[in-house]
Image 1 (cartoon, rainbow, N blue to C red):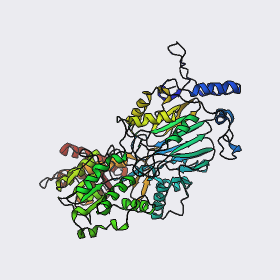
Image 2 (image 1 turned 90 degrees about the vertical axis):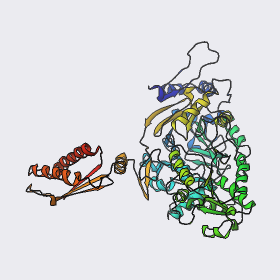
Image 3 (image 1 turned 30 degrees about the vertical axis):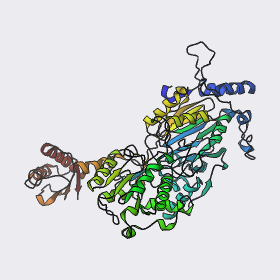
Image 4 (image 1 turned 120 degrees about the vertical axis):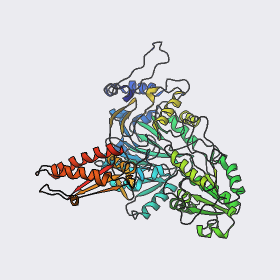
Amino acid sequence: MAKNKSRYSKFKSRKSNEPNNTKRYTKQNYRNNQSKNQKTDQQSRKKEIRHSTNIIKRKPYPEELLHTSNALNWGDRSQYKFKDFNGQKVRIIPISGLRMIGTNCTVIEDDQDIIIIDAGLGFPEFDLAGVDALVPNLSYLNDRKDRIRGIIITHGHTDHIGGLHYIYEKIGCPRVYAPRLAAEMIKDKFKELKLEHLLKISTIDSDSNYYLGKFKISHFRMNHTIMDNYGICIDTPVGRIVTPSDYKIDLTPYKEPPSDYSKLTKLGDEGVLLLMDESTNVKLKGWAPSETSIAEDLENTIRDADGRLIIGLFSTMISRMRQIIEIAAHYNKKIVISGKSLETNIRIAHRLGYIDVLNSVFIPPEDMDRFPDNAIVILTTGSQGEPNAALMRMAQGEHNRITLKPTDTIVFSSSRIPGNENKIDRLINLLAAKGCRILTSDNLVLHASGHGHKEDHKLMLQLVKPKFIMPIHGEPSMLAANKENAMTLGYKEEQIIIAKDGDVIELWPGGWEIVNHINSEPLWVEGNRVGDFDMSIINERKIMTEEGVIVLTIKMNTNNQYSYEDFEIQTKGFFVQSKDTFIQKELSEAILRTLNQLKPESDKDTIHNIIKFLIEQEIGRNYQKKPLIVISIL
């Protein structure tokens, strides 16, 4: 068995003097153990559940949790009793979210029931010419739709809900369970796309307890950069799985309650088999700054602006928007919103009471001239340098309502998503060329990430005390950093699951194993189309962009007596100097000569291959280029 594919653990005894007394055992060993008498099996599990470290101490699973799902007073679910687990296993499949930031989606299943956690949207990690976005590939569920019990949404950020409307109908329109703000965002999007008749959605909060098949679901509040962010507790036939959603330990959140640390502690005391822990900022030392830590610099920047203030941020960063809008309203400034998604989300948050200011604070762009420049705050999308976003259109002079002025101050109130650095730098240079003043977190404290640093994650582990840990939500280096951080608390390598998108992980009370891998390459979004991952298309686009295109049209002549009138050569995006006659003279002569040398019985495929090879050789020899060659034979 491959070393990195499986981890089974009966942890090293503290009393043993043997240098290597750690036992690894297979699924068959585990099933054999189940045949032992009940008392011995219970005692064995109690020992297994304890960590081999003095730093983290935890209680074993309660006796009643090991025997019946009714023990926690969840109602009459006698059909789902599972004594001694009976060798059952739960499978966890990270569909996407472990290779890059975005497209977060995880499937958890047993042999009867399937639940899905989040359905996010992401952006390509490298240049995919023409691809607008990426969404989860749930083709694994095509023949399993009847087992899907629901989709659980943790919060309303785009990387957790943005892909839902693309995949929802394909997986049979299961019921969605989402927090209040996220639910309203989802409803609004489905209504915009005229899909609201398909949507089945229920609102959840920290008091919600419900069954999805035999999975028992409850929630707990966590602080992030958006309201209504809830972690998930899943009681499964093999033990408890907890995922805290995206989070940071914020003891002074901006106008919202702190995370539910007492519930996290209670879950840990009762016993957690697996913690699925997000990894975005675990490379960073110390603690993540509180959302209130940026208030002073943000207020000073808004109050003291000499001209218009243009603030770029994510369209779902509702907590930050509320802070900016309330400060601006306090200083009698007017808010202009640029960006459809931003306008929609502010409208929803205002309707729900999360943004509590008078409607008169907001004005349309065409009314800006009625007020002094220093009384205007513009909120806009595009802080990641997205080509079609409002801020980029302003920078390129293509925005139809807002023209930049040298007196404008541009504030980037967001972090750089890995992979977007070049686009952001290009945007900043375009803005600087307009004479604008630019402020980022390098100048002032204008952004506080919603993702915890090393110490935030250590505290989460101390509270939840899981037996196993699975880093999620991040690039491979982030997952590795999460693993290293956990090991500083005494966790062993075999207790930490480092998986890849598409891995099928079997989990049971005594161990885990990666047993399979499925195709889960994200689907492309281009305009209103969603398709499978096909790099050949991207390669053609890159060739056209970098090398150009040569198009040859041939009228087939069965007598093999071709003339220059029987074919036409066109170039697109292929640089040819005005005095260069090679293509129209030398290349045309070579093509004509070759056509007339063909055998009369040559079919279209033969002609195509011979002429394409000729053009490749001649263009390569004379121009050192490899353009895309398109030949049409009529």
